[in-house]
Image 1: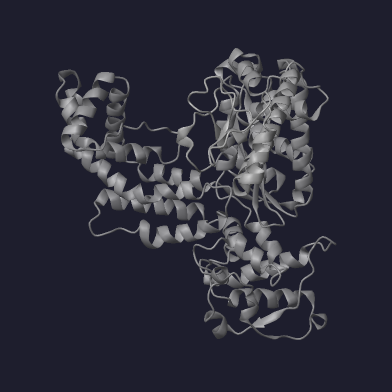
Image 2: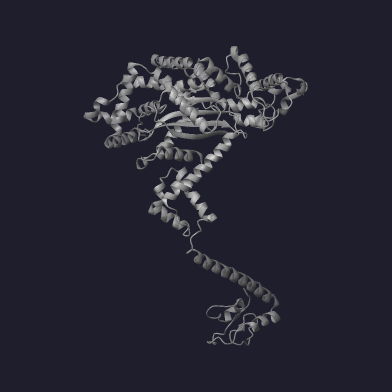
Length: 619
């Protein structure tokens, strides 16, 4: 801003079209504002009309410093005016374009349509959503130029293209794998249509554990072992998956599933979650427990169907200082739900007794001290076990190698009787442990679990029976010798020997983020002078000499970092570490299926159900 005695003059009226007026004003007596005066030297300036030329000239000749400031402001104003004009012109162009819809062959229209199709598939939204007024209004608000296609277009074109593209992508991924595992299960939809799910699991070249839900096929035939076996073979053939590359298939404990895999001659691992659930069910078979659990169920039902009792329970919880939790219902198909129901019941025992005791009609439901004692004994026996099912049910991390360590933990710690245990608690623990030991005593399954444990750098031979270690090592060598050699198989590097004492003194490879080069002391004779069997044996011995990895180590990341040092054993690791410990991945498809086959979509054809579930899990 100009300096000077600007207070003596009145500024120009109206809009100042030029910045130069910041340096000029008018005398108070000049009502018509005909003769501008300089705010700095107070000299009047002669002007013609609205011209400001003389004003600029005066500043330039008499006040050069102020003239530079004026020119600077003038340039800024001109630049701002040009930008404003450009914006106004763009707005006009956009306004004109708003009346023109996108070309259906254009990239923008296709991109939005694909995004809507992805929303329908991934979020399991009914296709008729595109005809809903609210959804149409949403799309119009986001982009007025986009015209939403019809429901029929999404059903027959957009979703079909998305399915075909996803299926092609999955097929290409399956072509690259050397080994895979699988999970399968049977399911009945809301409309009582039977389906059979199939999910494959494998470790890709980047050492990522992949889980792909291939299909949920309609299975109207009898669920006998022979027919299920044929259905599974057809499912693998549909995806060009060789049975020879199947490492193991994890299923529930159903006799038809077990028979189906025996008919096909496929390796089978029964779901650890089912086994543990059945072991607990077997362990709590006692008339006293049946009575106490029956009382617990009746009480939970009484509160579930009475809003008054729920309200009174909240008041009692507040007065007694208990957590404001609701009672939980046991679900026969949910592992561990009974234990959670018992825990919540014992937590709210005092509040429950107060509410039930205050009502004559429900006073008979008040649990006796004997029932409470029995429930406490049950809870103490199985409480420590409930977390293992959830921990072993993941499909994005290695789980099968944990089975033997978990059973060992049960034997040595969690299911061992304690001094303060009641006789009922001790009996339950013995029954559960006896059931699990019996079910995992099968030599074939035990050897499979031994191989998985051997390939996990956290465990190796720690949980393998010492009498079976040499047998497992021979099997590993034998399997590696039987692997076909192709161009895609990475060529092994030189076999090296490890100094055991020096290796144990080194920190964990994962923590240092280095290879195993620091463990190596010297090379053995060149590989060209050794047979392939000798190379494998040397590599296996080197692997077993290393200190066990930290329990928190991700075995897949460990193998990714050390694949170059154990190029042969890495094939076994990819084969066995891909096996899921439970059939939960296939059972999760049932939850997705429940979101697809809803009350409002109960008439979906089986082919549509299969495609929608496939898209929901894989896009």
